Image (tube, rainbow, N blue to C red):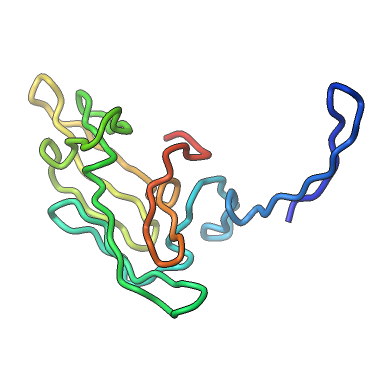
Length: 147
């Protein structure tokens, strides 16, 4: 828990506290700033060939539940570079190949097709944008760390 106080422009002082678990994770002994960190409360994580991220996610009341989220809805391939889709659904799986998920690092890797028909490799840490909220995988629209 990060606690402190700050002075406003009008000279009044406010106190605050912010749980750092939502923003910082221990990744193999190194602190990393990120977003959702769904992998800390999920198991049996996998990525399907049709673009679904699936996991068994913990809840506070009923143990764990199976859940999934389709990443194609949130990601676009723009000339070989994965970007957040401006409007849903995105298209990245239609122009990607060899897409795999390293379940130890939670990094999605593969190649995305460029306009010149060449291919560009990509790596995307899904823990930065996906969060487990009571057994439901949710895409964070405003991640704390850009790719």
